[in-house]
Length: 267
Image 1 (tube, rainbow, N blue to C red):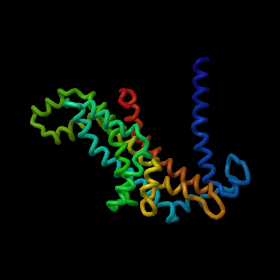
Image 2 (spheres, rainbow, N blue to C red):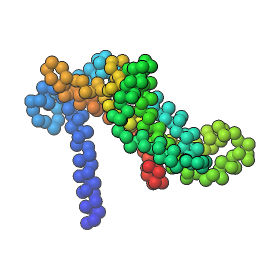
Image 3 (cartoon, one colour):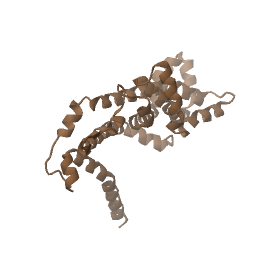
Image 4 (cartoon, rainbow, N blue to C red):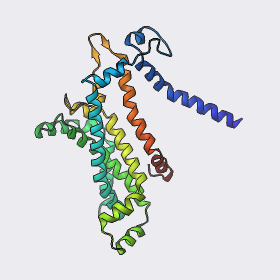
């Protein structure tokens, strides 16, 4: 009896979880007229015109390219900065290290709107407004502290004796870190890359304020779908479906690392 209830609850949870995604996909395969005029569980006139427009219209596909570029730049910068910083926090103790670590984490607690005006004024002054690097650097203000926090937890679980043994064997620090230490925390790197990806991919406020035309991401493009005839719901649903795909792929590839991170209590 208990097993049946478990399966029933699991089935209801899956239906509740998948229903919005199913509805979004179905809307993307309908015309705007059908969406507004009739209520159907399946498209009466199946069409892929919305997908064709997304991939051919110059007002849409650059948004996906820009968002992908933000994600890659943010992830690389965050990992490059956070890996040595997290190693230092996990291996060395110095005066004020706990206070410095707490101060680093305060950036996560603040909403992006707090830093909106300083970033805007700074980028306008130095000529970085409406550039890809501007948004990526703004995102690192939030992803680097998160990355340091996650990686420090994973690194603290690696015995210090491994470091000492490597040094006795004649390993330089870069060689030791890249060939021995980094493979031991690959789950932490995967989890960190996942959270960095998710933040950059879905963040809207900074990306919308710091860009205008050349570097606007897909999240900004999706908020500007109003035409003379109103909202194009089918096109907007299609953009939503295509926005979900990269996130789903990333979750699929790092799912084992995320599960291990939760199992170890590091996430």
